[in-house]
Length: 122
Image 1 (tube, helix red, strand yellow):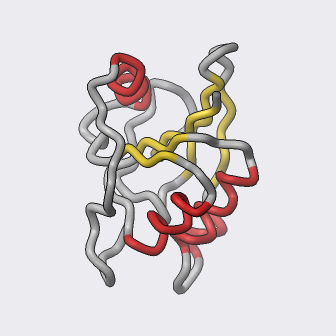
Image 2 (cartoon, one colour; image 1 turned 120 degrees about the horizontal axis):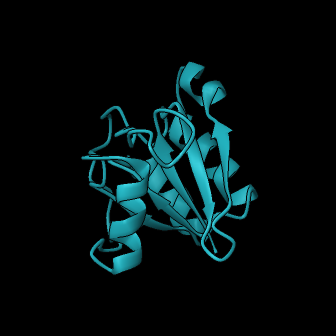
């Protein structure tokens, strides 16, 4: 299974980026092989609008099955749900590795709704 964590930089030691759509990038972890890759999100950072939807599409196309982030806006949340990608929010208080540990321990709850209102920057 591949999970993507919004990140301020590559690697498990990087801080979780609280923003989903305008995150600097994503650490993608294959939970079976433990290999990580880094997907730069620069194109979505520069977008005037639709950053969350573009980011959701990019991650779904990369085969990601779950996203760990801080704040996910309603349009991005809907796009992720439509692509069958599970969303885990409010995980922006530490490192990427710490967020992964919370997810794998079952202490992170799958979100049922976005935690950022429409018009919020996420």
